[in-house]
Image (tube, rainbow, N blue to C red; front, side, top):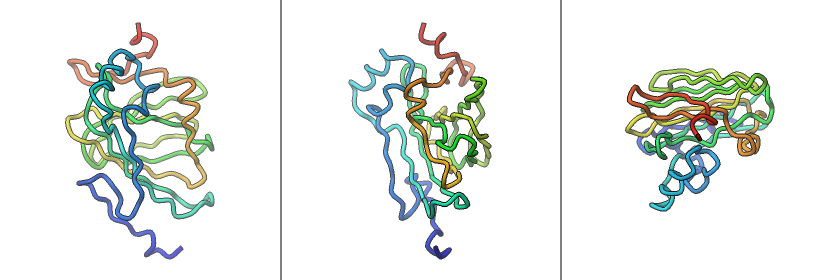
Length: 190
């Protein structure tokens, strides 16, 4: 592939990469993600809003190539839970990923597959987050405007959404008076 074929422009007004397909995720596609089922049902009854979109470039499929995507999560909440992405592991579990914050304010929930340990890191303009291999990751919008970020990952990493759909994350990120807070999912659901 010639380099001029992969030079792309990030459009931070629309949250897309020029010339790339955009995948849109609506609220109805995220039922298993939110812990507060009552608040989810009430929000969905008000309309099937767009929660996030991802615009991706995948120039090749061998292990040496890199894929990248521009993610944009809209502001909003389901009860106390911030709007979020589905989250995923990589199919190739040892594959790492880099996220670069471009606009807005958010948080990334990281969960180690082997230990189950969870932590959050802030994502905002000019931040770089390293997601190690064997780590599930989900991004939240904790601000009042869209949060945008660029994710860069090995072409052969793949995305495993099924593992998250079956088990989900151990924690949720909720709004409190003090700001975003990570809570155990089991405690929050009580």
